[in-house]
Length: 94
Image (cartoon, rainbow, N blue to C red; front, top):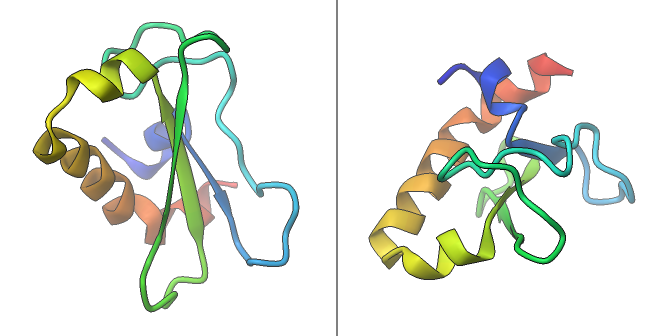
């Protein structure tokens, strides 16, 4: 999935002082796991940041709460890894 495609699922902040994200995925939008529309009643927001902050970005993505709780830690970590790998490219998608 390209970084541009990831903007359907991922939002981000460029700087810790920001109060609003630079980019925010449409909500309600598709769940990153099952691609079905989400609702306010069934959503989980996952926030990620590089430990060393080398990219200066923090990102978040959403999925159904029911999808998240039905996944193993390994499956959830795989989604985190895909989002983290896309982080350096996301800033070019504003």
